[in-house]
Image (tube, rainbow, N blue to C red):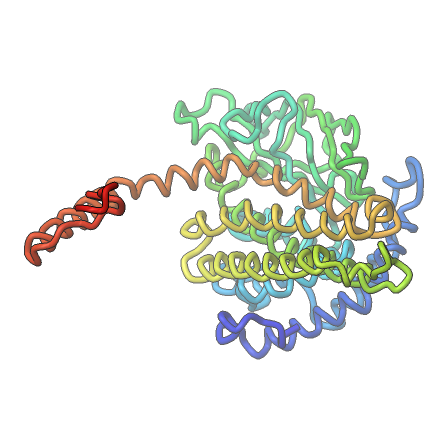
Length: 452
């Protein structure tokens, strides 16, 4: 809520955003979190899990819209479709959304739709916006993002092999995709697909293209849904999909042939920060569950309540410290994006993308440990939260890719750093001579017989 906005950024948050943040917090705490178990119950069992969607989601969407909570993620100043909030302001809201499984979808701010809507809003033409962006923003349909492939190391996007071949006024697609999140939902109507244009540019960064593929196009086969540590996330799902001579109109190409890297970088930057924002909220909820557990008077070990053990209080303290520190990293990235755009904030986004999931996993794991056996079971939300956030260390590029790039960028400073340090040492020698002193070294000229 607005009273908890960090003092370092409070003057950057508008009064309208503060009021909306309070509404978001109340909506999540009073409506969404209690609805999460109902969502799971309505999903059902067996194949029926993929044949419909829980009615409670639609009911929550209606409530959200009546409260003015809708599409808050499109940043002010960057999209004409924006509701008028900055990345920083949405970041504070997304933290609350991250405390609930259903909350983000209830306000039409859930992945992968958010990133896909940003692609269409930023790069789509008028016809593409009318056909796909408009119903997505209205919450009438859902979408999937298809980039990763099972047969190559997709962390290097240059490896993407999905074939896109031009034939007359159509493109023909062949290949496989997996981790196609959202593809299981019967409301999923559009895939945003990254592939390699046959006979394209020799520049490895101009060979990839992004194209819009209707989910019901002929030649598409959903082979299976992948699980995340045993969770299948129905009906959302993570599909393993095959394309066999799938034909789409040439007008479905986004921005132009060979513009895939440009589009994907524009998409993944905001997506990474959105994941980080929600992970802060998940961490807060895990800490809340830990506090509940350690204050349960029935749970005593060695004659003491859990809260009376020093190690448990250290877990609580470290969790608070780590969450608050990570939040500032996220908000700093959001501010940089607001002021200079996602491309200029790549380092700050990467810092948040790497740091926050690791922090969240640590906090959640402490809560799991406090609960013992219950913590790894379905009796708390902790196990599912851990599984979902563990995925984020792979999603949108594994940690190692970002760390490698950050390391290279930091190392570019080495020449200037060496020159500075050598100049400082030279200045020190000059000052030593000027003041007629020598550097004191401990243990110099020690006499063992009492004489120097």
